[in-house]
Image (cartoon, rainbow, N blue to C red):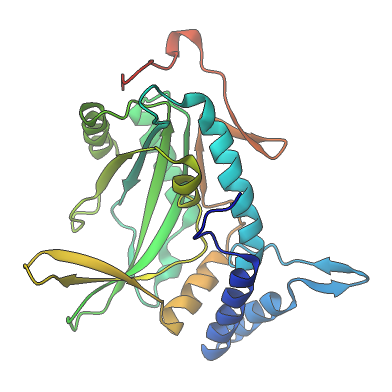
Length: 278
């Protein structure tokens, strides 16, 4: 069962055509090569369809997203608490993960994964954690300053207490364990995990946006999501194409076995707290 806003097969194919146009419009040899791989993805060869399995291909990643969303919901199901929550989801904006247009290739996904792994080791939290690496292109509306890419991570702590007090304690611990982006207004946000299917689908995305901040009529800051411009889209596609499709997936105390997310057994001396204990 798919979410109402989950991309359909037709939507993914339309996005692939849009990506091909963006790559060809970039007029770069390596972009032409990537566009050719996307163009040939799904075509019949020797009687069978051949897929590119690129981390930048909306059609191929959609298949993985369907698996990821259902597998995440299956892994989260045993952790349902009396209050209807399954844990919490934390969004963390780490330092050093901003890049201007043209410099997104300076963001090393392998290095980001190592930083996250070290931070989670310092956190000493025994909850199973399933997360992902996400990014957006951020602009300030009405400003002449160029926008920047912002890479950030989302982490679902399965079985973690979701009360306001317990979430605040986790937020403070995350602030101490991660090096945070100093310019971010809210570098760490922790919310209850109430809908594993909907919230799980956000952990592993393929549709990215341009986030434009603006001031509302009452003077407050807000953001709106707009489609990426072609140069931004082409650069993100080329950045994703460097990695394997599941390289953006973050797992802690969780392994993939028989194409399922399986929670590792936790030693008795490190048994998960019950109820809303954090």
